[in-house]
Length: 264
Length: 294
Image (cartoon, rainbow over all chains, first blue to last red; front, side, top):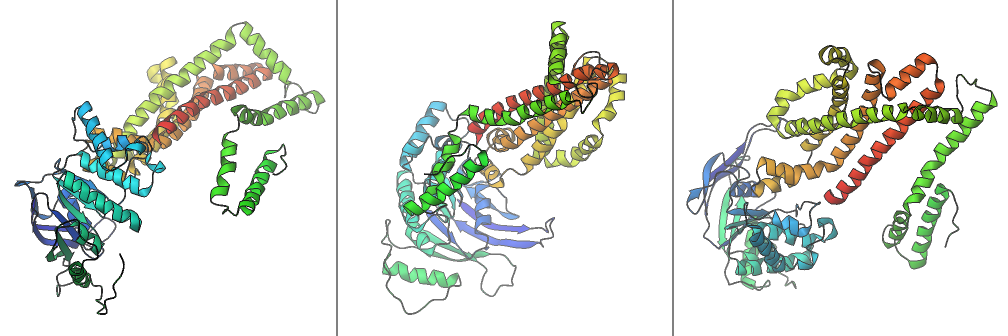
């Protein structure tokens, strides 16, 4: 997948919100099976960039290509999971996952695929429950299964674990890595959690305004960090800790020199 | 734990007290575990209980009516006794007239209601979903809605005559607008995030409507249907009062002309009963739909 010079600006809206440039010249090559984490300060256009990738929105200029062909509208090769589970409350978990199946999937094949996915995200026993009857973590796993049901080449995750409690989040990160090992799709992950980015991804892309640029000129890629080490990684790795503090600094969080070792 | 009393208010008060008590006894928070059991207990009450409580006021009304009409305070030509109304009903049904009136009125209402709500659903869906359709057509539909529906009567009679068509069409108009208004409004307010999920998973417009939007507005549609049904009965009576030779509205008008106050009361009570019965049918539909779609 490649992003070439993606710009996105919004015109003056009906409600009088002034025109603004959100993304400026985002160019990024992502190789198949890679996990890329997008991080950036709040409001820097992470989600807007994701919407270009999934085809929910199209760039003002520039283009998004998958396997060399440009993206036009919603693409069958992509699937997304949002920060919220966004399950249809009137459908059981299994019927929600079915929504993710590509259109025209044979019934029997679709059914076995969904069963397999529910097994993968450990939800077989809750498959007949409605979303309101399961926990937030379970609902998020169902949303992940729904995205996987597509058999996507590119899996787009918009802060997928952001709304979960800290423990569930760690479990879900390992689950995501298991899934990636089982079905190696390209994963583009937006997160505001630097630790999560370092634990999961091959590369971390820091999005934000270029230093010294005029305010309102839109975000671009500030830096790209290759994360060392094979997964699963040690969360307390010293090398990662150093990258983390660099990234945090890039996000505008002050680096405190006095490093106190913390259990994680 | 607490003493049970017969009246509803006392029961509720006792339950509240019980909650507090058990909260204190078991050191649970009042909002948490302790509150759940009493709520479940009210749900488990048998259905006849609600029926019985609901029947209290009507029965009291009839008793009061009987006392009032036999006391002589109000003369009999102004207020008939319940018995005389009953007898009027028996008399009319013995001659086969009552059943005929009830049947034709119900038929008109159901037909008009059916046609009106189907078209209201269709037009409401198009206008609620398409920005263009909304811009183009919504103001016009709004203007038609603003016409007091009875204003159509002379035109309908001129065009369609005083046959069934004109009456059913009037009721259709009456049933159309509540459904149209609720459906088009509700579709605009379907959770944007859920719609986006549908789009992200490559659903076509029609598919999106069937999978996400229609199920999401089921509760609103049902309340729209309820309003439409009430409107249908309203317009039925209007149509039958103005131009008909059969039906409950006609019975009303005829009884007014002949001074048959007992039949007037009979017709009004029948309208109440029929309205409530058809509304109960919607209630059954609602329970089914809400169980399935929420």
